[in-house]
Length: 192
Image (cartoon, rainbow, N blue to C red; front, side, top):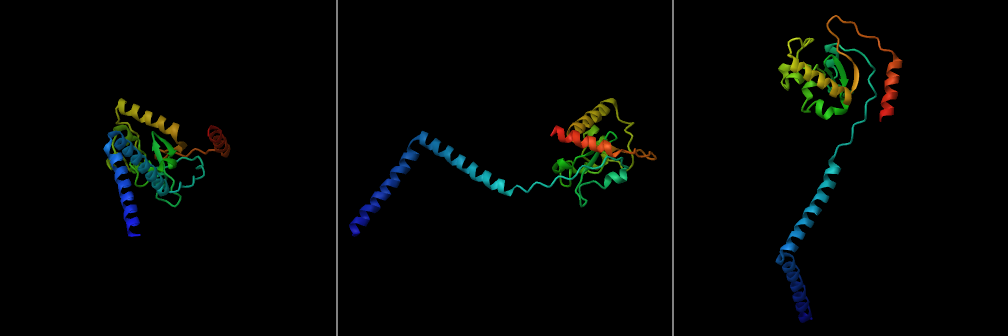
């Protein structure tokens, strides 16, 4: 019995030694082993990261079209109960909530949330000094900076929903009808 166990143990150890020498003895086998190991790692790692992705936040209903003062705009900084984020660019207010990971709290452009970002975008500044606490007519910007603001405005218009305009001090808000909102919603549904 002991002899059989010893023989079986020798066969197993010689089999393992042969497999190891085959794998590591040839550069081609070693390369294939490395590729296989890398692919297995990527598969396992992707499954782990897919499990850790947070659930997508539910989409908020469309905001009724309205005009905003700076004070009203500041309420939409993504920190409120609803979590909605609005940004003004060149006098137009956009709902950027679906880009919250960029413009919301903690995002790289979170500083712009609830503010008029025109000057900051025109001057490529991410500092708080580029955001003013009063209405900014942008009259001191040069033509190149104003062109930059208009380009940013077009980009926001293509990507996000326009919800109204930023009111100048003393300016009265426009009374938007409900039919305009319904037409806009139908156009949005058709484009999706």
